[in-house]
Length: 159
Ligand SMILES: [Zn+2]
Ligand SMILES: [Zn+2]
Image (cartoon, rainbow, N blue to C red; front, side, top):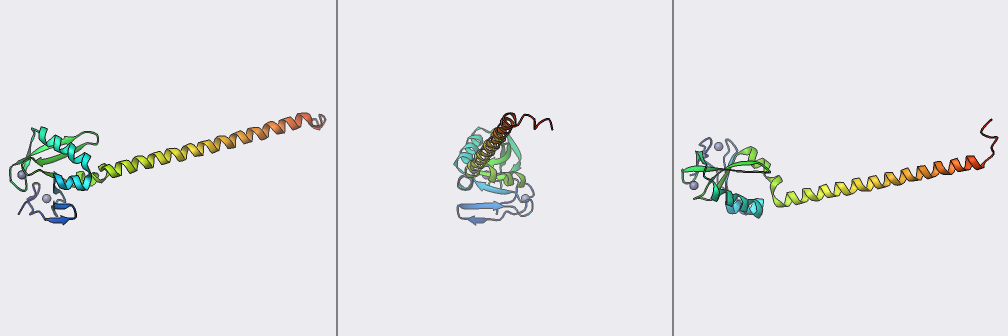
């Protein structure tokens, strides 16, 4: 049975629709295979992680839950993620804070977030436009009133 690389608790095996996930119920970290990551978090992240795994030379002090060899430490920039991985088992270990920050990184969420941002910008622009229109209308009214006052009875202003 695989054990947690952090707290040595035996890991659970959870069958998900996309494959297997190995969570630790003590520290709430989890091991995931690359193919599982690809399914759950999108192709872009999985490909990026695979490239990092291939390039990594930095040995972690934690052991792979499956083959009990030291894992490799990998990190991504923008967004920053610090992960541990076993190349032989093609498995990635996520600690809880890292895992919780992940849903925001999947392709789908990122693009829907970008869409939301565009929507907000569009709404703001519309509001701005309306405000400007309103401003223009007020100006127009004032100008008309001024015009009326000037063309009106000249004695009226003095009284
Ligand atoms: Zn644990
Ligand atoms: Zn391994």
